[in-house]
Length: 146
Image (cartoon, rainbow, N blue to C red):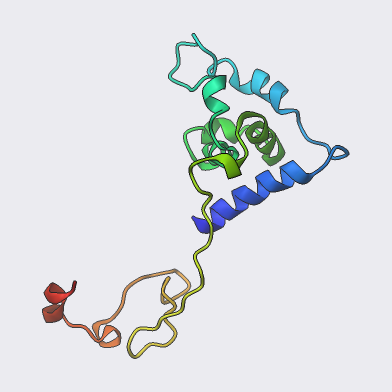
């Protein structure tokens, strides 16, 4: 999830700093062509209208287009078009009350007897199974954990 959020942030950031010489789709035109039919007052849909969308963060709009409720519609757009829509519709994320996901500070811990366990998973498939011998904890001790 952190990797995905970082990717979304970078897409928005790159879209914002690309500058006037860069080829970027116009967000207002994309909204009119691809979104307006559902996202306007009186459309008959439960979709947020333009004023409501302008109150959302750019990252949350981009996440909706990439992996959320609007994924099917977002899949019809290029990454640049999705970034342009997020820029046009959303507020800058620094003013949003919902914080942007950021990676946690690097912390390393090791389970008793297994110094290779890094806290996320013990192998490349990110499994979280910890044998009792490595954990140093048996079934009898589990109920006493706090």
